[in-house]
Length: 347
Length: 172
Image (cartoon, rainbow over all chains, first blue to last red):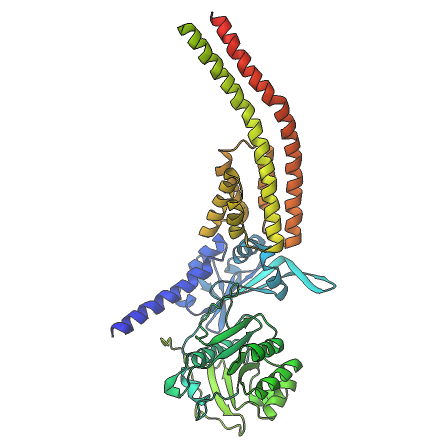
């Protein structure tokens, strides 16, 4: 009981810290406005959007709202707090730690990861030279994506991902955008890495190729999310190259990566399978039928490379698991969709 | 006997005052040349290490002379508190605090303030241009300061000594 109370306390505090951490990155004016947003919404807030000369917007609970000076959430855009160019410029100062030159590489990719693993997408005037995108300047909009590690979202599904001998099946997570596929992947990685004795999973070495810094949310090379004790993370590395590097150097038992789909990924996957490494990855898509029409990934599914296919949707709540399919028979292993997996478990 | 002692004290004092006035010029040239080398360090760090400014300033402060280190550290402290000041605001506050103890002239301070408005808010190449421009102008101020120093240090010294002697002569 004592432990329960303690864990509750820690949980609340850490949720609170997420906003404080984020609000620090806004310019004082916006900090005040966002600070006034009701606490109940902040807990579920997923995005803060700044667009020059447009009202401030926040996104959460599957809906977007305009925000007025008092932090009230509105549907009427006329009354929203108008974001100025100065707001964006100053906010970017805090986000880049007052040093645009230090985030040049990130700017080229269009986003910056900040402490806590939150990501800030940036748009503006793109400067291009012979080698490609040189930099972005005259910034016109920011999208701050709140990263919340939801520990425990994979608890209920782990038992479907492991065979009788304790090996992990090659698994593919299929999901439309913003349905929590990276969140799910992250939790699966954590469980495999730490081990989950009650489901017969003993801790295994996991290699993660995090091309877009989303899984680990690395800030200056240090992952901000808990990926488990036996996890090796290659941050910002192209998937195909990264998988090869891991196979050669880190001897992982499982390789996890986000959003597979290019031709060269295929070769790396084959290489990994040859080395006896299990694979966990994600792909954009609505359903399995949807997948079969896609080029690279469709072939992999047809070849029955993946033994488990997890389909997510946004029905009712973010991250509803529509089905867990057996990759060989395409039979659904769960009787009804799993909803509201939002449990903050301790392990 | 007392007369003699007083005379010596008066002369010594006025000579000292002259010395102090002269020293202000020396101080300024010294500060300017140190500023230039500090900027040089900033430039190198920005190009080769891309260290973010709050940490960069601390790093450079360790290798700079006291007055400049004071400016850099104050600014970096303000930035690290994350109270919502932009870099140029924090920099200006740092200058306001640091200038009280320095012999820098208004035109030197203006150059620094100007640099603060540009530091950090563009890519590496652009930063280098801004820093070099400031260094160029600081060098010009330095040359001017050297000339002033050559002219005035001696002048103030002898002025101090001579006025001391004059006071003594008038008194007796």
